[in-house]
Amino acid sequence: MSEPLLRPAHREGTRVLDAEMIRRALVRIAHEILERNKDSQKLALVGIHSRGYFLAQRLAREIEGIEKHPVLVGALDITLYRDDLSMIAPHPIVRSTDIAFDLTHVDVILIDDVLFTGRTIRAALNAINDLGRPKTIQLAVLIDRGHRELPIRADYVGKNLPTRLSERVEVYLNERDGKEEVAIEPQVTATDVPL
Amino acid sequence: MSPMTTMPPMAKTAQWMKKDLLGLRELSAEEIGLILETAQSFKEVSLRPIKKVPALRGKTVVNLFFEPSTRTRTSFELAAKRLSADIVNISPQGSSLAKGETVLDTVKNLEALKVDIFVIRHAAAGVPHRVAQRTSACVINAGDGAHEHPTQALLDLFTIHEKKGRIEGLNVSIIGDISHSRVARSNIWGLTKLGAKVTVCGPPPLIPTQIESLGVSVTYRIEEAIKDADVLMLLRIQHERQEAKLVPSLREYRLRYGIDQGRLSFAKPGILIMHPGPVNRGVEIDSAVADGPYSVILDQVTNGLAVRMAVLYLVSGATRMDLTEGPAP
Image (cartoon, rainbow over all chains, first blue to last red; front, side, top):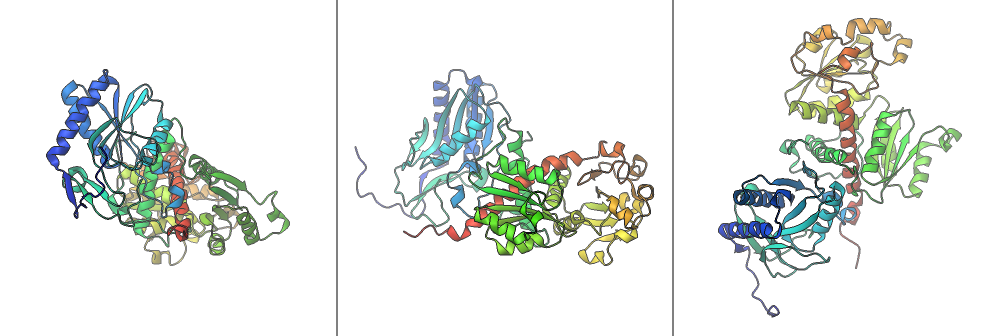
């Protein structure tokens, strides 16, 4: 069934997930990852800076709790692979890619907070390609808000969230934002370059 | 790979808005911090199996070196290549400069070929500044006369921060020919802006009068310079200085100011020995020290690449400022 044509506009900062819902979504995703990947020793969780990396660390803790062995976790910065780099000024701050293990032959779970246009994931796939040749790359996101501009889909989704293009989805995580929620905000500001 | 070592949060609010990097004198501490923090991220690229990122794909860099250079030129060349930029090397020998073309005409001609970034070294102070005013391309100063050599100072700052975890409050002694050294000048600007305490030391004819006005202390005694130093920054003594009678002989210089293991016995434990290269072994530094445990000379070279990648990345982002509004519909 298609989305109703007239959906009530989200008010300023409508909360769509609270801390407990985020936690449960991650627990479910951890189980889904293990269901799909029989050999959990070969898993590597790669989070996209910044919130994807925090989610990767949390998923790793969940998986370690279930499987009783450590899971590889890395951080990926995709800035240098953005397709709009020559169009944005000043250039965005580059953060460190920190993947201290070989990606070849492992099952990489790429993790981001929000899946939107798919351009970040395209950049991440190219970045991973320069770091090694994983056996598989799968995508886990906390929120899928639609509006894809590239043929990309997620393998694991915390919550599908139909949005308008003009709306903004904000993920707040304790590690960085001092609070824990996902909210929809009505306006896209000039500084909010979707990628 | 080190686990997420990060620079201090000094760059949190900084944004790079300059199309040129001409010297450290005109940079704020935040801007210097932003370059160092960006370089931290770029260092990892050179440790990858595929040492290349597509960030500057389609950009053209010209290395315009009017003075001989191997280290700096190669470092810029590799930095550009690892960012996927195209780079052309031009030296005065065998170019139209040898036929009497002026620097500005050379630049204008290259600009007509749609060059994005000029990396310029020249024996005369101020040439990169003059070029920067006349071109819409980015200009990076790779050394102008005895004036500034910003990327060298930035890589020195990066190396100090990497090894010591901080710059503020450190005692840094710069030893050698301060008068003719653009490395010393850029480092004095950078170090003092970041809160280090700088002492310069060398033979009196090679120490400029009123150098204290830059916020540094002066000593002519090497023991004084070593005693409290966390970092010793040695400069190359050029053979021309001997000919100009500014030092009696290289042997005399070595006896008075050369760093050997005996002199290091006065030093604090964990002192860093730095040198911008090329090293005159047996003059300003003994081989045992240059190759010894305190020497970070080769780390400086490695870090220079990351710093130059960061600088190329940042300046090239500032060029299209006029286009940020987007094309008219």
